[in-house]
Amino acid sequence: MKSSNPVLSRLGQAAERERAAGYGYSEPYPTQGYQAAPPVAQSMTIDDVVVKTVILLGLTGISAIVAWNVFPDSVAGGALFGAAIVGLILGFVISFSRMANPALVVAYAVIEGVFVGLVSKAFESFYNGIVLQAVTATFGVFLMMAVLYKFRVIRATPKFTKGLIAVMGGLFMIMLINLVLSLFGVHTGIRDNGAIGIIFSIVCIVVAALSFILDFDQIEQGVRMGLPQRYSWTCAFGILVGLIWLYLEILRLLSYLQGSSRD
Image (tube, rainbow, N blue to C red):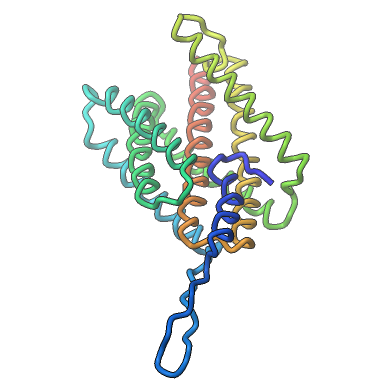
């Protein structure tokens, strides 16, 4: 089963590569009078993923706070654009690399922290208190989805998975087309403060929340398949990507609602 997150969907392929390479086994070496058991690499656990996720969230948060307080408004725009481009490149590299790379994952968390910090500062300058509201709502939604998954209220069935992946693909194409049209001065309204923009943001939030169900399921599969411990960084990266997307969509929706209340 594939996850909505391209990183986590590669865990099954990684497990197959590890088994094909004889993961966890090595040739016994001669000893004095007996043959010792070969060293075995430690397998990934749920706790490993949780710890790595907390570490990445901490790095992202610290980086966001530093960016918020260090970058003056005169250079904030350039720094924001640079962080967005570098973060996008790192995200693609991590997503499509064949091996888990903790250094790249950590670098991604720091760069995205700069991006999130500067975006948050811009929104906070217009809407006082919106960042705290968005952070609270983001983790609230994440914990709610974790509970729903834990008690199997929502399950990652094949039909659910295929449908959600199709919706996510459609949203991505819509946002990409909207971005291209905006470069030519055409505004569709899906990213404006209006009925269409609010509805689109709500749809994105719902889809981002549901995508965690697929991610939780894929992580469990990785644990069952006995992936090496280093892949916990890859799983944590996938969760971080989802949390950042959810936070930005909630931040945008709150700005719409607060903007409407001022009118």
